[in-house]
Length: 72
Image (tube, rainbow, N blue to C red; front, side, top):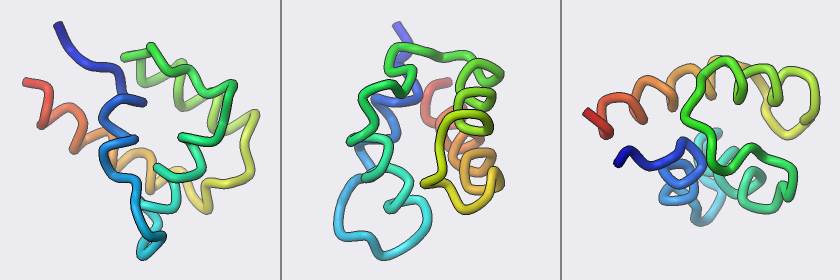
């Protein structure tokens, strides 16, 4: 069974040294984040429409690629 993107993301939490870590920390505090989703479009739409803690969608896109690599 694949883990959700959120589950992958929270493994990156820590001192906010870079955008990826900042994103992980903020998403962990976001009670409305789609925590069980493995769907790019669902998560992307949520981030674009509902949050202001992501400086650019490029951060999400790069992490999504890493998520896919880690879940082969």
